[in-house]
Image (cartoon, rainbow, N blue to C red):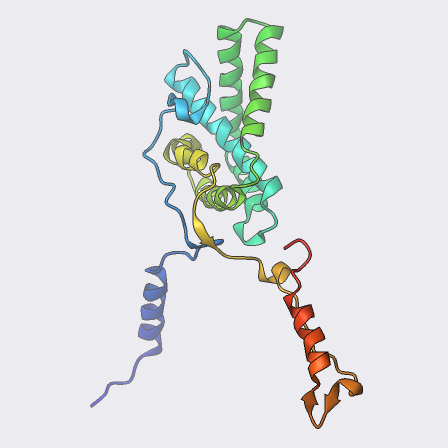
Length: 230
């Protein structure tokens, strides 16, 4: 005899089934694998450019680079609201304000130590900030960067205070890889790339419920036109 399915058990089974599924890709049918091993900050490929830095200073560089990347993402990636790049950035700034300030102060001391006290060190810090911000501006690889930054932003806001450097260590290599165009089979933007071609509705184009050949040719030509900006 078939036993009735209890609603509570059914709900639990459905939750488990959905939880086991990977999050759907935002842009790609087949997302590129950008994962990398954790980093220390000293890797040349990261481009932190902090020669002679101590482990603490490297951590500060990673955290400040992460902040810059999430800031750029908040500005560049809001075309896809589901990535939450703006709200994630704002929440990260609020949640990790103390660690971010400490990282900035540590970088300031690094440049004062390695470049020179006073104005030379301050100028070097300012130039460093400008350089890392511009390094995260991307056009061709925007989908990769935005999707990666959105994911990292979620990690950041759910990370314990004082541990943002761990997120940076774990995912900075991935973030840097996302700046290079890769991946294929990405989704288009149906709302922007699609234009409806409506057949002519005037009476002279129809006879006994059929569209006349001359009017159909005009309709076909309209449907074949490439959308503006496509």
